[in-house]
Length: 284
Ligand code: PMM
Image 1 (spheres, rainbow, N blue to C red):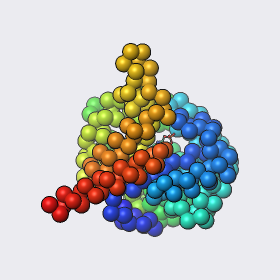
Image 2: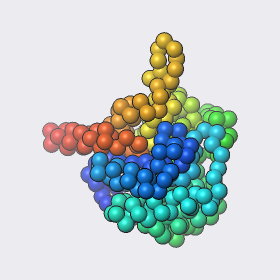
Image 3: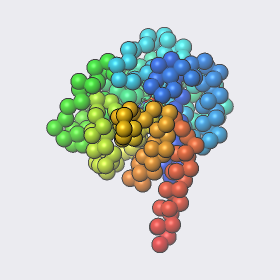
């Protein structure tokens, strides 16, 4: 991993395993709503080679409605606490400052905010106070209306500029540059074409000089790519893991700091292959 405060340094792309403690996430909703099941799943992902476990209590699927802060805290904090106590490196996936603060207090070592600090005006202050690494995802609005926001002149230039503006605002609010991780926000106010354009030009983000996180796992654009050629039916979410591992390989090769995935086993192997290949190439 690149040097991020409080996180281990790795000589390869890191693997962030997803634990959604929600009833309605698009590919694993309802599976880990029970705290004990969520903790067991997080530990299983760690054993499979995840370097971080990303715990979220609010679905952000297109059209999703928000949960209350109380409900989000109730879902997330006990799971973060137990996983951290068991030695996992835990990240909290939240748009709320109070949830981020409570999760860090419970042992989370990274804050992953799909709104990049835009949804909650208190987020920057909490992130600055904790000093924890902060994932700044490209985001244009809440899930309920994000499809109408998928309009760009040039998606790579626009996303890069909007992320750069976010970074400036966060720095002005007291967050340190060393805390920041950038994320193109695949599928958030983006069509398939937008997602592919951003992946194909990942260098536009890596060249901003901060670690980059890629979160393509099981997303709709992979279902569209692999749609049944006869019926047009999208490949179901749970059958998109091989395609996700392919994105992990290409992201690692393009210099991503980490990939966020549901199926850790395939990606954990894949990023190790990339690292061995690149080391051999360097030896010549
Ligand atoms: N996507 C989802 C959730 N959290 N976090 C980051 N940093 N980047 C993403 O693209 C992202 C995220 C939605 O996927 P899920 O419902 O399967 O967790």
